[in-house]
Length: 503
Ligand code: AMP
Ligand code: ZN
Image (tube, rainbow, N blue to C red; front, side, top):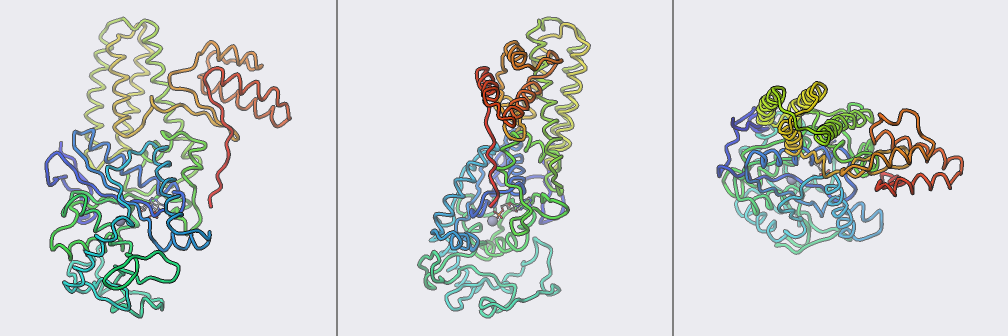
């Protein structure tokens, strides 16, 4: 079945027909690097990572470009507050962004162009827009003349003649011919970073960087343009107007927008101050848990965040881990049997594979696709409950099904370590598996015995972390250290959580 995507431009699902069959050229708006990213930003980047991975899983060759906005009012303001140069702020948070994406298991873009490294190209595009009468110069600023572009408002569905506009008085407003016009170039102000241009020193507006860099790296009329839903207007509307006015050709074919992550019905945003930094969340939860949380809601729907939703996502991941463990130990305990049950399981998995693809082909419905993975987990568990000597081939297929389909959504499972967290510390259990016998005898040595025999490793480690916490609170550091050293000796790393305060 062909992949269908919801195109914001047509407000409907369309079959994905790319310029070159078998390849997708895709541009996603990247971060403005003036702070650490929050969980809302992370949702958008994870959603596009999921889309990219699924396209690749389907055999498509994807070129993924995501820019870095490293010159912007917000960066300049932050630099002024901190009393450091703007480029220092941008570099610090660009590196932090890369670290965060790596920690989250998001694939790095094929190309990550930075605005400040493409000023000359932007100046060239702006010059052509002025020449063609789509832009005008006013006191060293250059503005796009919205009335010169017939299709303005098409993407966001706005008819500007019917739109009320509240105009706040500002020197910029004075220079604009129409309140909807927007800056392509901003004349330099004292203390701001600036570059030379035919209109005097200044810096580019935000929208022009994406129009310029997307076409530079992907060519005009590339396949998919993505970003958060909050970017449809004005950012994407303006990107499209500039790019199409410049070239006379179509800009992006498919516009994909990711829904917002909200807290208490409000968008998580730095300006509202209701943010939870991704780094802070990754101190307590493993990356698969964060991804599971995001995948559980269709990428276009709003996602209402709560602490509880992370705990639930963690429980879902554990269900998958536990099933994989059961498969492995069934294999260790023989697994040489044969029987009809195995064939039945294999054919159920074939059916679930087909449904998984159908859901994902239907506008990347990861929530429904996850449902098929959990259905497989249930089927495998039932099969293991009933089979004394499960056939090795069926076990192999069950494991492969889970790993492959989780992998298509970016859930790493094997590569990631299982993380157990208490409120003050966390422990990483290598996915290679700790030595069960030694863990049990160490727990007994530490005075934790009751019913530990049946307990999964994670719960046992959790109990040990709690015992260590109790010891630390009562200043029994010898016992606290003994527990930490004992866990370390078993290859389980214990880290004390240093909480990063959002700035
Ligand atoms: P920014 O650095 O503010 O330009 O944002 C980077 C990306 O995060 C953009 O694609 C935004 O649309 C997206 N974004 C910002 N806030 C949220 C949110 N609360 N939920 C989902 N995506 C968001
Ligand atoms: Zn953009």
